[in-house]
Figure: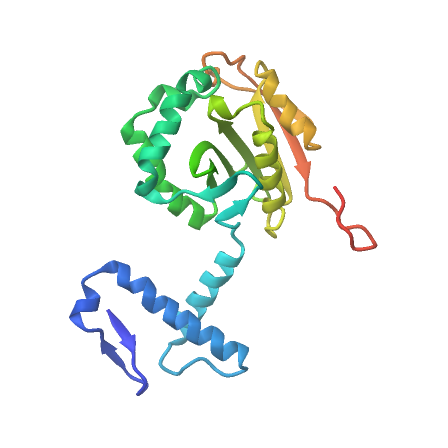
Length: 253
């Protein structure tokens, strides 16, 4: 790997820095800091940072700015992004203790294993970076009590929301509050025009959350085969459009 030097040329990094890929993002961060500092000061970027690198860094910065927050405080609980394999033990325990509660409605439960949990955690970071899926753990007093996510819908301007809780955390309004927080956070992203929640027609308890948050039922879709053991094979889809700013500038749903 090469790095720009102050003389305007290019030189190799010392071998000890080239041994670990983890060092490379640090040099990108240094380049980003220099570019942003010069930009704010009204100056050109340092000559030793090539134009393609400047553009790539600025694109990365803009992409990060258009991502949701990794940590969102919700009073007595928090939504936080997954922390890779360091979250394996609490994530696996959370799922294990929730299997009977989830099995009727969640088809992925049939394939649950240590391997699938590790795979989920391994892919969460890259899916977040691409914007395909924003996966959050729901934690209360340091203990994981559920998960929630948004993922790209059928249209680029739409996203779907999903959520589930440990059985001991149900009946406390946590799912509703977590979903409301996700709604607010997603509408801060410029490319999100609407959000959807889908649930099986037979899962009547799941209808309460979108109805409570102002979603409107827009269609019912045939699912083949039924998504889960207790499923009817019909999904109810609810939608909430981005709030329209009123004339006086205040925000209303």
